[in-house]
Image 1 (cartoon, one colour):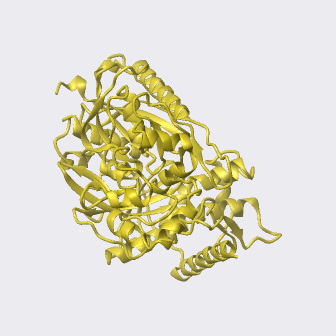
Image 2 (cartoon, rainbow, N blue to C red):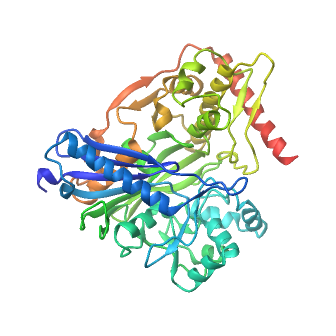
Image 3 (tube, rainbow, N blue to C red):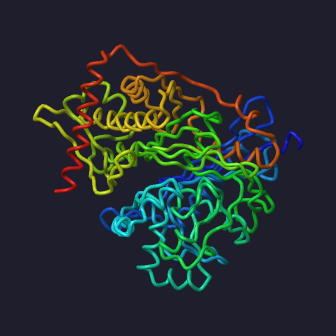
Length: 511
């Protein structure tokens, strides 16, 4: 491949915004030529419901890509969009799209992974004795987090969606599937295993959508679900897209957390990363063996290459960076999320004040969709700085819970934690994480590892690189945070208080 063709456009479609990243792999190190992020609206039609408008998502991608292309052209005179060798996509994984297969027009708003509306459906399936079946075949738990029960809800509550699906005109897909459909002018209807493994209908051992599971969820068949391909390879080519030339191949797709695992080059068994985005997501590479969790974690597909699956343990806390957005937007305690570092450094929170950010329920290892967020331990002397500090500590405590569960499942301690995501730029949060976890926390030079992971797999899929070993040397570490001198007894007291705080919000939810 000519040197001038080693440019990748990575599209990272996230929960609150879409990012376009243009990466040049022609030199010894990857060079970012242009980037742009565009936020889009969040829709909350009822308490606990979260929706996205697919047209607004598409508009955000068009704007982000256009601006990234303009930035690359402004700073690199030799750049032209025709030089893009391939496109990589990464995306919020469990958000469900329902759209017209031919026109790609949305049939309804997308139901976001944070949405809790299907809690009753999950309980119904558990009552039918199906929880073990879903767990064994998909590696997941019956929770509103995942796409499957969202399909059931739409079929039971949206007559136009039900009619379109049963008539063969409508389809269900994760965000990656919708994006490839739009980018290809409706010609491609595809996904790959890291996204498929989040749907509750994908058998992660056999690599197929399971008819037994689709029937249990009320789907007429598997024809409304996308074709599954390897995570790096040909998915389609651009056609009739206003902001891109025709004919650019789409050669890499990964769900956002798996893309971050790839972007951190965690290609070896036991290597782990935590992404601090809207939520916090800890993944550890399992290798090619599917292992079951006994500590409240999920087993998921990391990626598929040449038909061979790599698996991962995953722990998810649903609210991380969104906790600071909540303090900023709903409570008015912050002007901007970065201000939290300065404010929180002026106070101590635990073991006096705790914030359990269960704003959309508790994820792993608790899996309690009814739980709600709470501040605990407030007195008349509590300061705004303490509350902000408690929010940072709440993020770190949640990740400590995930680390403890991960170590139980691995039967060995973790030795280092690689981190990324927007909130990982907060030095105080990273130091708190190191102190409470007792692990060195390694932050890369490029925090946009999710988009970067998609770029790496697109580069792999189009032949810029031949295997994962060639990708290992690309990652660069920017800083390592080591556990401080805080006495172990003080850490234990703080963590014990966190456990009591979690128990308190769960007790309140059951009242």
